[in-house]
Image 1 (cartoon, rainbow, N blue to C red):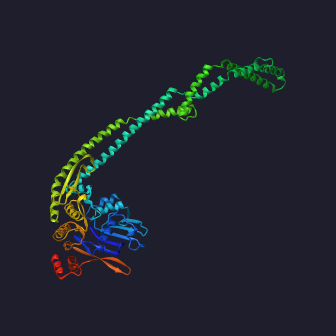
Image 2 (cartoon, rainbow, N blue to C red):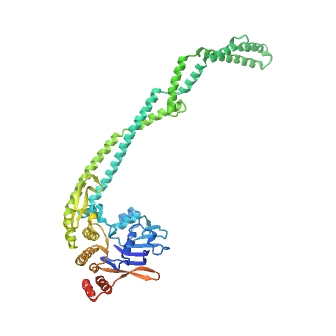
Image 3 (cartoon, rainbow, N blue to C red):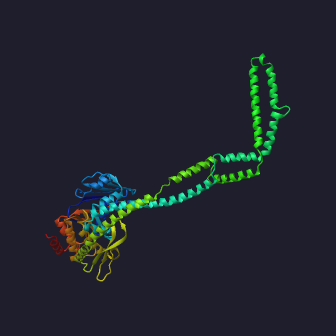
Length: 551
């Protein structure tokens, strides 16, 4: 329940404070005095957008602060979930700086507008004729029917399962996508590996083949050079080996004459053996090196295949190719079989879907039981409010797929006049009709939906006389169970007030400001009489006002 509203530096309000009580609070005043501005300020506390254009004094910040009694409304879990301290009373505050920057607070803790909207939506139901027309919304219409049907716990359970169902469906979609992607990747890897396996590179093969081709292409020069070298080392008249033997013999003749000569002689023998071994190696290379055009061609073809694979995979050498092939094999092994996982999650989805369909049918059946009785009550109330030919019916349409609220769509259809076709409320209801519809519907569901405070702005648009009196009685009866605030131009509604505020404009120097006054009994008679006949009120209007007020 809202206890007070403080407004500073907003629109044409410099500063004012309203205190609210239980029951019905009525706000009246002359046109343009600022009655709806109060609700605009309250809208800011409910998280609506704002800018610095709404500032009264452009160099000072605007502050809107609302205090609520919240002990009875079970909001502790909400506060715990959002990490806020639960306090009673609860204070919601909005501040708008001269630069247009806006800040929101819950009990002095900064919060974002979304959280403010969620919280205030649990405390206030604000109806403004050309603003919040929530009875137009299919989601709100369904919420009302579910409230009347007592579906809250069932719907919470259904939505918990539906959330799991949606999560599983998303997981299945991702698995199928992964499987399709894997299939394409596996096919591509297998194609590439087939090329590798067909070429089948061996360790150091490119380097070895290039060396061999180089030798074969230069076979004659190798034979000629190495043959000549062998001859110089072994067979020529002045062969290196012969010269080494001769030198060794010379040293051998005097080796006992000097202590170092024995060692030098041994080194000569070692050099001879090394030269002979080198010469033998030359001879072997010459023996096996032949110019072989067929082998050269064979090596060329093989290198072409290896170079093609090397270029395709941007490899630098044979080892790079082998590493790439190994990596591809590992990637191929890494693709597990997703089909078993897909089959498992498909079964889980099927089980959840059966559970959901069963719960959705219960929801639908419970809703169906209340559609006709509720529409009859709304129609009866509309007739009381002067809409004698108005009719409303509620369509329940099966959905092709499960939704977060079940398997059907609830739509309110309205026919305002005799012979009118049923259409969506937003398409056919005028301002006055919408006001009466809103009052009728919300008064019937207010006990089922937790709406601590209901606020109506000019709900009496387009009505007067007996209809206005009946509307006043409905508001009064509603105020027996809920806190109700109503801005009205109609005396028949104003007289039902438990607390009556009068909004007026007050000229000051070079500006005009809005003030609010809580009326006493005498002042209420004067205001109601003025609403009946104009200012100043006539004597008969004053008597009529007293009669309406029962004083």
